[in-house]
Length: 320
Image 1 (tube, rainbow, N blue to C red):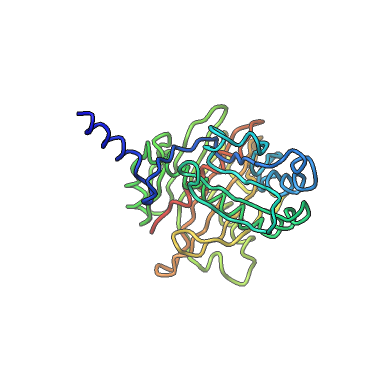
Image 2: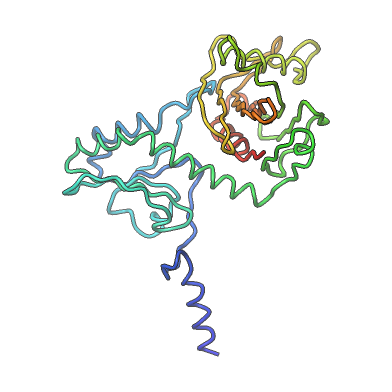
């Protein structure tokens, strides 16, 4: 009996990647990044550069909110439970300059970025030269973690598949807010002091890609969709793009297909309502269309960064 128990313990410990080492579950809030370094580095130029890049204002929000919340951990305190945090950047002075991206080094899932430099200036340069890769890696890690959490309470997307020929992952907290048709699907989630809305629809490729500017076309399309499908609280009120601020436009990929990513703010024409939106127009050349998935947040005076991030994760789960 004792031998059996011993073998069971060994089988639990011998698991991941053939390493024969038990790896604990990681922990930490979404979009919280831990910075591990000596205090003098965090209080100096390196810490300032890290804050400028990683805690800068998130784009497309109506008020200032950081891209990531940062927590500094002194090097000598990076032990035990502190090593279980899901994302961390560890800086240290060394004989050689180096940057290494490591998965699941102390917990799982986990992203660790180890940055070594010969001196303080070298550490700053390595971080600055790799900031885009660092941000993309953290975003990918956080999206995957959000998917993992969504999968725990996954709703059915049968109506979306039937209407538009695509599937997405969204939690049961959402409900269908409007009867689906071949052109427009509307999901809603009630949140404290407001709501989150997700719209999915399709348009011909020529409506976005023509002789006019792409961003102007996207704004015109979302305004026409808002007028036709997203009414405000009173008659003759409806959702439009905030005219005072031009949205941010990027190029990306979803399910391996080219997509335009647009971030900005929306308002209700004729009513005092507004908030941020995130729009993805995904090119489906085989069907001569863009599939558009957009989310908006209405949450007056409250932080919205993590709500928009949830919409990003749901949108990036889209599959044709």
